[in-house]
Each structure stands twice: as C-alpha cells, then as structure tokens.
Length: 248
Image (cartoon, rainbow, N blue to C red):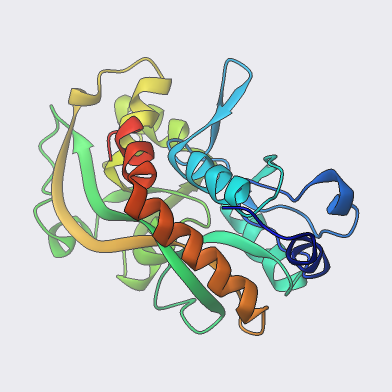
C-alpha cells in the first residue's frame, strides 16, 4: 500500500508505536518506547531471530504503513505501567473488563481461550472454576490469567515471570493448575523439553482477545488507517497465512 511523504511524516509526528515495530530511522528519535510482550507464541527469540504470531502480524502492518520494524519486549506489568506514562503510544493489549475503558481498541488481532490446565497424570478436578478455585494456581505475573484468577477468587495464586516457569512448576507438582491459553501452554511445554500432551485441559474460563490499542485520546485518523491495513491483510489472505504459520 503506497504512502505519500506527507502521510509518513504525519505518522512520525504522531509518534505511533505498535507492539513489535518502531517507525523508520528518520523518525525513530521522536518515538516513545516500543511495547510488546515477550511471551511465546506471540513474540519470542528463536536462535537469535525474533518471531511470533503477533510479531509477524504487526511487522506486516508496519511494512504496509511505510514504517520500519524492531522489537523491544517487556513483561506484562511493565507494559501496563509504560502505557500509562506514554499516552501517545500504541501496543498490543489483551482486552478485559478491568482495562476496557482505558484504551481505544483499534482492531482485534487474535482470539484465544483462557483454560484450566493440569498434568495429565494428576487427579485434580479442573472441570470448573468452582472445583479448581482452592487449588494452587499458576499464572504469569500481570497477564490476563493473573487478572482473571484474582477476579474469580482463586485462593492460592502463584505468579511467575514466564510461561516456562509455570510449565516446570506444573511438571514438578509445585502447582496444581495452570491458568493459560493453549498457545502459551503448548510453547511453554516445548521450551522446557516436555511433550505438550503431558498436560490435560479442563474447563474454559472465558474467551480473551488481543487488540492493537492506543490511549483514549490517540490520533483517530492514524488509528483508522491502521485498521484499514488490517482489513486489507484479511482480504488478501496474508493475515490468515501468518496465523496458520503458528497453528492458529
């Protein structure tokens, strides 16, 4: 999608930041920090190469917007804090009741399902939230699972910084249940060298979705342009191709 020089300059002035990309070097000095979560399969490093379903999606959005691409990953909690400090930024954010009024939700990028997960050889009941609420529950700190676990009244929440830590704790019996989306569970298992089939899924807690978002008062013209780019990717099949690359 060709862009005029004036459009690209306006993009620089707006200091747009999208999770997984920064603008071209000519305007990089004017940008606030780039926010992206460092959690596989969304964005992660593999043998020195940055990849991930969200990384690839947003990288393509950036290319079509006439922008360069780079990744500066942060944990969930730090992303939330930095977004509060930089109202001109964009990021990829999970949309939940707790943050629904904080941002302008530009476009949905990915749907997932928050699930209860246990070891396949365990006897714990994960058939419902009510049955699992008293179990030792593992979450990633600041993640949607962390927020949901507190909202639903889980009694023993153990928060760690990575999905791999939860995979290890579950395998060792240090937690009873892991609250996570299937994509994160699968990659967490693989990254510790475990068979993904070593876990079993119980009840779906709730659907969750990841959005390209900005502050409430961000540039609505640029937000509409980014939304149009995603629509074009959906029409030409490139969006679906990226999802298939990561088994979505």
